[in-house]
Image (cartoon, rainbow, N blue to C red; front, side, top):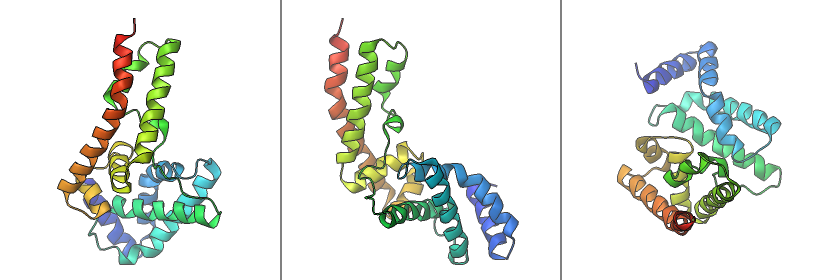
Length: 197
C-alpha cells in the first residue's frame, strides 16, 4: 500500500469517527508541516501554535475531504493559508519569497563549494546563496511557487500540478524557467570562481 493509499485509509477511519487515525496522520506529517510554516514564521513557539491550528482546521474540514488531491497536498494548502492568516492577524506582511537561503543550495554549483572552506569560498558561497534567494524572490509568483514546492518541499510534479491546479507540462515549464533564471544569475559568479587562482 502506497503512501497516498495509507493516508486515504486513515482519512476514511477519521471520517468514521476514529480519532486515533487522525493522531497517526498528525504524527506522520507534523514535522513536514512545521518546516512549511517555519518559512513564513521563523519563531519556534509561533510555529508550534500555527501547526496545531492547521491540524485543527484540517480535522474540522476532514468530512469534506474526498481524495481528489493527495492528503499531504490538501494539508499543505491548509498549513500555508493558516500561516498567512496568522501573519495578517498579527499585522505582518507574508514574505514575498517562500524560500530560505539555507534551502536554496539545490543548485549543483553550490554543493561543491562546501568541500574546502577558505574565506574566499565561504564568501562566494554566501554570495551564491544570496543570489539564489534574491532571484527566487524576484520570480513571478507561479514560477516561485513551482520551484519552491519542487526544491524545498520535495513534491513530485504530479503533487505540484494538483496544488497549483495546472497540467504537469505547465509545472515542468515553470520549474525549467525558474532554474534557467537562477542559472543565468549564477553563471557570472561561477565563471569568476573558475578563473580565480
